[in-house]
Every structure is written in C-alpha cells, then in structure tokens.
Image (cartoon, rainbow, N blue to C red; front, side, top):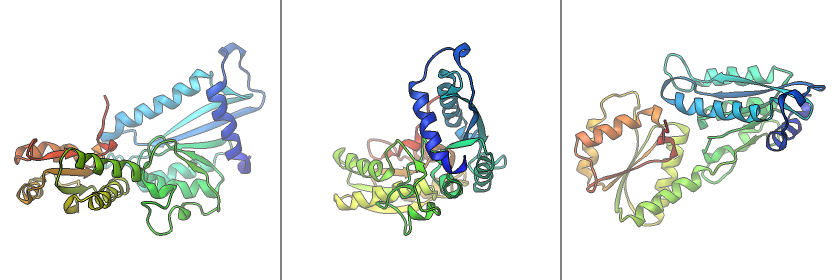
Length: 284
C-alpha cells in the first residue's frame, strides 16, 4: 500500500466530492483508511485549527465515513507546543512520522504554518505519502518564484511531487498588496515581519514589488514577537514619516500587540495606515 498512497488518496478525495448515500447503505469490504491532520489546536491559532478540523470532519461525515469500499477514519493531531502555544518543528516532525508509520494512512492534511510544512513535506515525500494543505502560502514550497536557493526540490528527496495546495501563494498576494498600497496613494512604507517563513516571505515579496513600482521603503525589519512592548520600534516608525506600516505575520506572532500599540504612539489613519496579509485575519 505504501507505494500506492498518492494514487489511493486521489480515489478517496474524488469520492469525498462525488459519493452519497446513507449510512445504512455504506459498507467497507476493502477495509479501513486513515486521514491524518496536523495544525495548531491550542494557543492563538485554536480558532483556525478548529475550523480546519471541522472542515475535514464534515467532509468525511458527508459521505458517511466510507468511500469506494473503504471506511475512513480521521486522526487529528496538534502540532503546537504546550509551552508556547504555537507550531513547533519537533512536534510537527513527530506528527508526520506517526502518519507515515501507519500502514493505513493515505494522506496528511496540513499544515497551517508554512514553516511547519518545511518539516513534514520531506518526511511524507520519502514515504510516498500525499500531503494536502488548506493554508500554506510560502512560494518556495512548490515554486521557484519567491523561493530560497534549492527550493522546492529540497522538499522532494524522493524525486517526485507529493505536496499539493489548492490556494494562491504569497508571490501573488504580496505583489498585489504592494500594488494596492500604491493605488491608495501610499508613498512611504515601513515593513515589519515576524521572522517566520510565511511572514518574512510575504514581506520580502511586498518589498520587491513596492520598489519596482516606485514606493519608498524605509526598512524591512524583523520583530521579536515575544517582546510585549513594541513601542520603541513603533516610535521610530512614526519618526520615519512612513504613511503605511505593512506587517508580514500571523495573529500568533504578536500582530495584535503591534496594532494596539500603534494607536498608543499615534500611528493612526489617515496619517499612517496599516496593512497585512491573510494570516492576520481571524474569524470567530
């Protein structure tokens, strides 16, 4: 089964889209298959993790947990550290290794954070395990544009593609954001990033595009998201005369602190606007 995992997941995912019927009509003559999920299920990202978990559970429930003669079982894993409440590379590796060690596992659904995907993709690739993400947007995971040297091939030690994402990458989002800023009349931008793969990556794309279209970039500065007082940095930004602060990051890496303290130091619209990527959106 291990060599057939990617083909098997295609059959199952197609079944999730097309299958119907009631529970009584379903049978599992071919046995059981497991779908593993991995994303943060605690801390600031709990709402996002819960939403993705519920989406997978709902999709499986809609086909009565049975497709093409197989019973489906979802194994939900948390890749966050209890100590920090955010994704942890060691935990993510443990989750991926648990999945590939399970002979009934056919797909690894995750991750939420692009940095976590860098850890799990090669593990799953070596085991011929398909991986599908609902959230990763760092370009280098699948393409060369906006990637670091060696990407994305370094995530494919087996020499083939096993990782898929049905969403746009940040080389699109970051570029469009810069063009939108110019259209709004922005002249001078101070870029912040959380020094994570996703946040730094999209900030860099924003910066590159902004420079090409004539925006003045004061800095692209990494912030210490563990620091509760960002006022010294924000006071510096205010003195720079920037009319836009762009923050590449997610809620769990201190965006709410930056936004709140911007108001406290007088960095408010219309003098100074704030912009960020999809990682700053949290829907309750």
